[in-house]
Length: 403
Image (cartoon, rainbow, N blue to C red; front, side, top):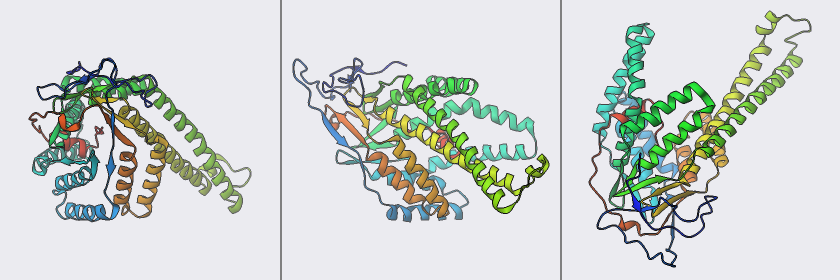
């Protein structure tokens, strides 16, 4: 997929976020159109670089009131209110996210989402029924249909999300093709399923590149400067964490179970294997090891998400004159995610609004935009919002397609 952008001015200041980065790079570009900003004189003159920090102004108490109403109405209406709850939630978080004195907006139509929710929900319910009744002649074709449509649903979801995201009166757009989605989310996922860790980082790279390169704002187009190698470093780090987590889980389970056995006398010397598996000591060992492994696996996966997000933000450009950057720590995001999960578990979910606001404030507080043109200079063009089916599927089936 080629870039639909034209060569343009470079940032000439050293980029501390990229080890080889001086400027926007050889593929830099500027927004097209007669109203696009004129390139600065680069003959010996350094373009002025302006940095804009993102900020989040939402509060846990304020969002809690919105959240509890959404939950109540969704339960009372047996899920029919869910699209309105989703839209209201995104409108709250977008509306409290500020860049250069302007907040973002989310303009999706809940009624359009409802139609997609009903269709996807009906198909999922039919699959669940067929599985429980062992109607494999019906369940298997539904699985094949889902696998075949998955890249298409991702493509439609990205188009819908972008078209309904607005900043400074201009909506974003997504110009990636369905064919490229079948490469990034079809072929890459198949390769990752077959080859595991050897292909999974490549799949992450292909998917993030597809998302960034397809993004548009007005007539500006996205460009991804990243490479596949850092994704492998992230994947290997996560694998090391998982292996170390497994060893720690076994040791911790053994210590707790051994202490219980010594104090209670649950196992005596000479006990056979049948006595071991039927003892309280064994179940304590299995329980502690399982919970410990889940916790450490969560740490490894959250590290992947945080490190990937930071790397993508540090290597994304828009129109050749805007570059994003991230300074938040992936390990800080891991700690925040773990403590958020513990708080939600202890409060039986009532801390969910607090956790969501805390996460948004942490991430957005570490994101900035650098530009060599005024953000008001971007020229808009009409964008169709597209079908809500892909967005509904991504919500109900937990397809992770967010930037």
